Image (cartoon, rainbow over all chains, first blue to last red; front, side, top):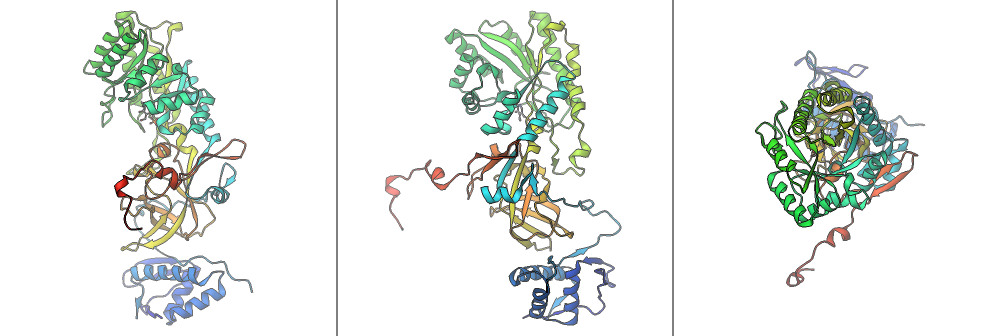
Amino acid sequence: MAKFSVPSNLAVSESGFLFVPSSGETFTLNEIGSEIFMMLKKGSEDKEIFETVVDSYDIDLYTFEKDFSDFITQLKNHKLIKEL
Amino acid sequence: MTKRRYERPVITKHHSGFMNKFGNSPVSVPKTEIDGVAVKKLTEEYGSPLFVISEKQIRQNYKNLFRIFRSRYPKIQMTWSYKTNYLNAVCSVFHNEGAWAEVVSAFEYDRARKLGIRGENIIFNGPDKDENALIRAIEEKAKIHIDHFDELYQIIELAEKMGKQAQVAIRVNMDVGIYPKWDRFGFNYENGEATEALRRIAINKNLKLIGLHTHIGTYMMSTEAYRTGASKLVHLANLLKSQFGLVLDYIDMGGGLPSYNTLKGQYLQAEELLPTLEQYADAITAPFFELNYSSDEMPTLFLENGRVLIDDAGFLITQVLANKRLSDGKRAIIIDGGVNILFTSFWYKHKISPAQQTSVHTENAAIYGPLCMNIDCIREDIVLPTLKKGDQLVVHHVGAYNVTQWMQFITLRPNVVMVMEDGSVELIRKSEDLDYIMSLESIPAKLQTGVK
Ligand SMILES: Cc1ncc(COP(=O)(O)O)c(C=O)c1O
C-alpha cells in the first residue's frame, strides 16, 4: 500500500490544467488523470484509487494497475508528487 | 450501471515559447485497413508481425512513372530492380506491367530466369558476376553491364571460347555534383576510364556494345544531378557515333528516385522537400535531345527504379508488447518487429500509425523492437497516442529493401501477404519454421552427446 504527498500549492482546474507556481511549468491532464491527481491530493491510498476507478470505468484491475504505475512515474518525474 | 469509457491517465507538459523539437504533434490518423482489408483481420489470419504488400499501389506507381517519362520521351523501357524486392509475386506484378528484370548477382539472375524472363530481357549489373553466370548470360543474350576491366577481359575470353558475341554496355560513374560520390561502381567518366573501356569494346568482334549505363545513387534529392548524369552519357554516345559510327540501342539512367520516406536528420517531411517526379523526368530526358542521332536512331531510355515504385506499397503490421518509462521519464514502446526485419529504420524516420481508434492524448515516445540489442530502435522520437499491450501499429513505406535485406535473428521471419486488386489476400512468402532453419545445419558426430 502506498500513499503520496502532493505539494499543497498545486491544483488542477476542471479542464485538467495544472500550474506549478514555483517553477512556472504548466501541464495538461486527461479526465481520468485529473481525477486521480485530485484523489492523490486528498490523500487517498493506491488501493482506494484502484477500487474507485475499476468501479466506475470499463477496465480490469491489472491493466489499470499498470497504467497507474506509469502515471505515478510520470508525476514523480515532473516532481509533482512524492511517495510517503 | 454502464461504466465510463476508460483511457489511461496521462499528463503532458507544455513547452511554451518555443516550438517543441518534434514539431507540432501530428494527429495520428489510425490506419485500420489496407486496401479495404482490416488490419486486425490480416493478423488474425497471418500472425504478427506481418508484411503486407498492395498490388494496387504497385501497379498505380508503375503506370504513373511510366506515363510521366513516356510523355517526355517516346522510347521508355522500365526494368525492375530485383534487389529492392525480389519476392516472386512482386516481380510478377512488375513483369506483368511490362518491366524487364534488372539483376545484380547470379542468384537474382537465376530468379528472373525461373520466373520465365528471357535473357534478352534481363539487365545484368553489379561487380560480382561469376564465370558460370557470365557464360549463361552470354549464351542467353542477356544485357551485361560491365563494371570493371577485369570483368571486361573475362567476358572477352569467355565469348571467344564460346564463339559467341556478348551483348554489353558499361556502367559509368561520374561527378554529378553530389557527395559522397558513387565512384566505386563502373568506369569513371572524368578520368577517361570510361572512354578507354568503350574503345576496347568497340573494336572487339566478340562484344556488341549496345548501351550505356549509370546509376548515380539512391534517394537522390537533386534533379540537377540526373541532368548532369544524362548529359555525360549523351556526350559519350555522341563520341561513339562520331568516332566509330556506333549507334546505341539504349541509355540506362538507373534508379535512385526517392520515395516519400523521411530520412533521419531531415527536419521537414519528405513530401515538402522532394522535387516532383515530373521535375526528375524533365531533367533526365532533356539531354537526350542533344544526341547526334537521327530520329529513327534514337535510343531507348531504360530506367531501373526501385524504391519509388514499391516503398509505399509495403506495410509492416506490428503489435505493442509493452510500455515502459526510460530513466528520463520518456515513454518507450516495445513492439514485436525489430530492425532485423525493418532494415530501413536505420536510415528512415518511418511513418507509424496506430491501427485502431485511440485516445486523443499523445505523448512523445521511442519505439524499440524485441531484439534485446541496443541498436534495435525503430523510432527515436515519435508522437503517438497512448497505446496498450496488444494494440497494433502500422509502419508505412516499407516495401523497398526490407524483405530482401532482412535477417533471421532470435526468431523467425514473418509471413508476407499481398492484398490483390480484387481485395483478396494471398500469402506470398510463408513465415519460416524451426525445421526449415535447422535443416540447413548439421552437428558433428562427436558433439552429439552431452547434457539432455
Ligand atoms: C544498379 C542499380 N540499379 C537500380 C537500383 C535501384 O535503386 P533505387 O531503389 O534507389 O531506385 C540500384 C540500387 O541501389 C542499383 O544498384
